[in-house]
Image 1 (cartoon, rainbow, N blue to C red):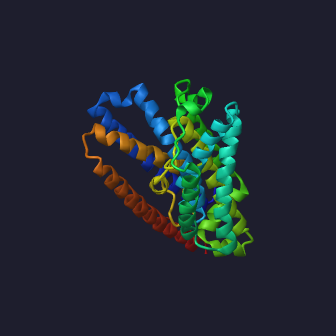
Image 2: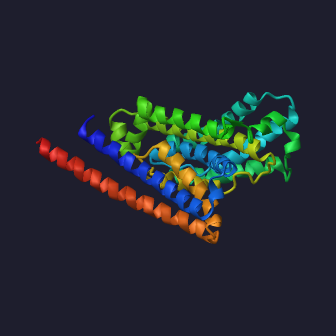
Length: 333
């Protein structure tokens, strides 16, 4: 491992260890106040609560690594959730894998719309996805027309995905683990995955180097959309009752989880593992503060402080890394 690569690896480790330490500290303090916080049921609830956010955070991390952002993930989740409910209402005997593939496909299509507009027209991702956030949500509202799909309208086996466990681990959490491992291996071990970091570090330099920037960014948004579609299907399985407001406002929590998880908002660094840890940390904060007797208002404040701290840490580590690399380069002369 070269010195620059080792330095970058250490930066990733420092970020993720810091998040893990904050999570352990929060859980420890809350457990000291109320030992029931780590009961089997509460741990299961924490895993279920963080699953959907973690899946969304993995997709968002892939996009942010390329120096972009996807604000439409909450609307895609809502659209996929309502589409899943409608599929079961119209086709009661529909196999569950077909519903999963349909949700993922719908999400991927929405991601392709985002990626196509951004890559082909070179319109800033913030502007495009802010627009499609409202477009996809508008389609959802038009389709729903005030209707609500209830648990009684969906198959029992599908709803059981939201409650079933394997060796005590919720099935929905296993979905998140599989997504996390696949995304992590892709970003680390495949050239097209590593090129996403190069694009985020310097898009112009990546283009000059011969990396197909537009194509890579396009597929990053397709991946984000597909994972948001999967999250929509899992949302339907977990909650059973679906309306056009599913996922409303969740895009901000997703971005917060990714940034808190150590993925640089300016792209080029971070990992999906950190993003998933960030999702777990934010979910745990939401469960821990009421136990600690803290006003729910401070939950938002705590998340804001974490975001600012993460950005500050990111800049500090980036400066230290640049100095170290510069020092190594000077010694090499």
